[in-house]
Image (tube, rainbow, N blue to C red; front, side):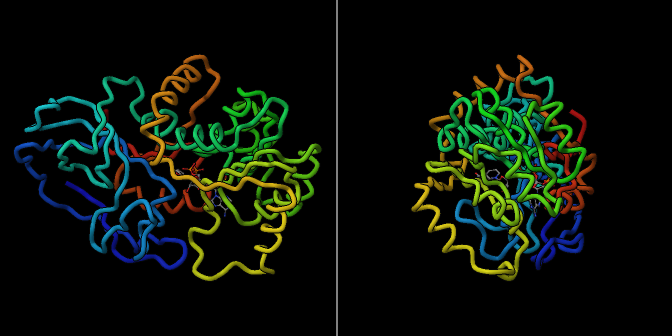
Length: 337
Ligand code: NDP
């Protein structure tokens, strides 16, 4: 049983030395437990917060020397639990390891899926984040302009595609020409701009001649600076994440932009609302599953995955996620389905 543990708390961008691959015996389930074999491990930006001593409000931080946490698709390989049988495919939270025990409370049966990894992406948490953030907070109307960065990532690609389904004009921002081409040619965005372009503010202004009505905030940083002056009166800003800052260990350089933001919030009557997807499962997950399954089946939402083979490659892939090296929803194939 291989597992990847937190060897050190990172300063800034994590390094491979912050992780350690360990071997342990495969545990045996006690009464009421199942033994899970990890098939796919999801790698997500929130894991950076779990590596800090003081973690986020919505999840405990990982202990030093403890296994890295994470969402997984697993196969039940032994069961002493009345509701699960050997062979069942389940969505769970086994973390960065080959095998894990569960009492079933964190598990959701998946039935048989042609592409089980989608339960971690286009049919799971990241796409659900896009759905509730965009539809319940952003509320795009036909003809409005929606802007989203990390535009080909797990959340952003779905934000843009749903916004198009709702009749909005969509401008993406992504890292590099390949990703931008994909956003326009495959995902149907109206335009996509490279976040590394020093002319980003001017290019964004040109791509949004009627201003911005919905800015789905995934990244913060220089992208937010470019967006703020373009927000229209009554614009909505679902605040989903600020990945440009997850590795910050000092305040950002330059003048303090907070007065500008708060002044604009008043004058432009902005709705700036943070949300955590975990709060919305009870109310909205069923509607999401129904809509998204249909949109995927109709080819109106096209999932793109970035699949990395081998648990041992998870640390490097995770570091890459924080640097924009992933292209699509990042998952690790830990074992053959
Ligand atoms: P992605 O698949 O989009 O991967 C992360 C991407 O972020 C990278 O590929 C890169 O894309 C972009 N990025 C990295 N560094 C920077 C930077 N300095 N400036 C701008 N962009 C950067 O990840 P997810 O779709 O899983 O997550 C997207 C956002 O959603 C994150 O902020 C995450 O924390 C948040 N989130 C929030 C949830 C909630 O409940 N509120 C739930 C799930 C996710 P590129 O190089 O193309 O710009």
